[in-house]
Image (cartoon, rainbow, N blue to C red; front, side, top):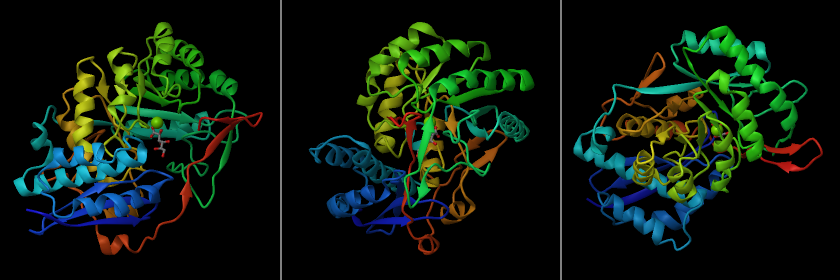
Length: 402
Ligand code: CS2
Ligand code: MG
């Protein structure tokens, strides 16, 4: 079997997605997610102009060798664009392997380690009342794990909360939105948010929260310590993680579990965090961290240190990533939780999928490969729309971490 075509499909059914489709001479094809929110065309070009020509004529079954060729062979290693492109190729090749074998991806990885995958949903409110209403809706829908994000009093906008009150899409079409941020206002308010959730709903659900890189290590330590009575499942991205050693400062002060890694693109971004057990969950995802081949290495390394997976699964990763992630999650012996925000209806139509949701858990289904397809004719009806992630500034105008 040989690769005869590798096409990059950019579509915008509700939001931009980049998909790689690899076709073999026997007609079997596989698809991979190559979506990098706000930098989609960079990955599309990296694939179209540099990677796809290298794939033609290759044996699709040589998944590891192709991964090594694209990683070492690029000379310029790592980075979100490179690793997202490699991930898309890798996901598509595993999809082909599953179709050729007639097996769902999770069986190729080693079979199911659990009956289903616990997912967490997003309860977001522009104010405390709305956040509690959304939380109640998620309990009603059967979620066992719920992330809560809320508007902060006297701050016009904040990460994770849609201005319209609907589902949250951070990228703004056509322009870079500038948001103002006050750590002081945030730290004063957010413990009261968790207190209100626990007061109203008790401790039967896992409570998660995303700080989204906004604090310094000592501020993160202060927050982690302040919220210990509310027993969070995890505090996510408390501080930027380029300096992995900085997390020692957080660990010294609090037992609140820490989740980090959705912006990571290789094992090197989290090696120290894992081996020093500075985190409890690794959030790296299939699409941005080199695909199944690389994330499997990360998960197995993490399992040596009792660090569990908690893959990023925002709606700006495509349904292809979601489908493949559910297979990965079903297999991973040190699985923790999977993020699931749902998708705009047009996206679910462009990407038919085998997964199913049931009362706070999901299952990838038994279709061969990862079980997600792309309707190319429908995808063509949704042309790319330029969109950018926001930037954050402190109230004095200093550029900060969004
Ligand atoms: C967030 C994401 O889901 C999360 O945990 O951090 O929504 C993140 O902001 C987006 O994926 C960025 O595109
Ligand atoms: Mg996050």
